[in-house]
Image 1 (cartoon, one colour):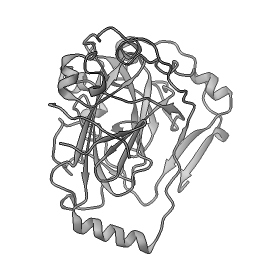
Image 2 (spheres, one colour; image 1 turned 90 degrees about the horizontal axis):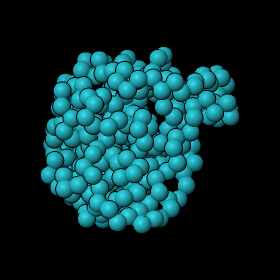
Image 3 (cartoon, one colour; image 1 turned 30 degrees about the horizontal axis):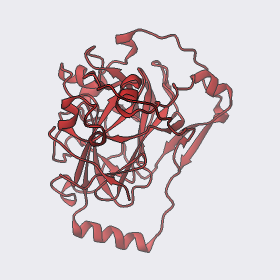
Length: 334
């Protein structure tokens, strides 16, 4: 399967899909919170460009990699997506929307994808009514990942993406409608503080250790129900990509680059008066929570509380949104 390209730190999948991985603050694991801010993009690099320094399994799967710290949180931004697309998001090949095993087919019962560009971002797994549990990176082998808790095994790790474009006739109808009424797309809930990576020598091959996605705290975010019949979408994916999560020491050895600095302390961010966000789309319908994902426990239950201080944002810091080319990426065998 071809068609996925890397453009800077953006993955571009067939059908006009654009995906960026955004660094963010890790939420407390109690209570329900506004959407946290973005703290810059994770850098992306092609596995094929570092084939002599990555584990053999990574070479076989192809794709891209990004550096992430233990317990660092992230969200997926779909800003820049140009046309309607169905996007599947996997956490260790467990669907982050339905909780079902990874599939190369779209399903509506339960829905196993998000609809773009209506879904502007995804911050975690679909685990509650009008809420998600935040994506948080943890090592494989502890059982703390979504994959480990849902399947009982930790084989894959990483993040998997798969896009399905509209069929020709539904796409033509959408384009005609788009011409009739031009709409304003919602702003992102991100603020960028990224710095350019610094280069260093990278002579050593990487160890085979891997990272996967567990979950952190809960936040107010809807995963929108598709209002199209599933027959409007292509029957097979137009493109897919495996995203490997790499520890900072691995990143240095593989790429010769310094990883981004460690995440900003939550209380320091809040005390600085910087914004948090609420997003609401009154015309969209929220999906019901996935039964298998409701019971996924946060990483603190597995790794212990790290006692990071927390100061809740002042209501005035929570801002309402909306109604309130690149280089080809090599796919592999996964």
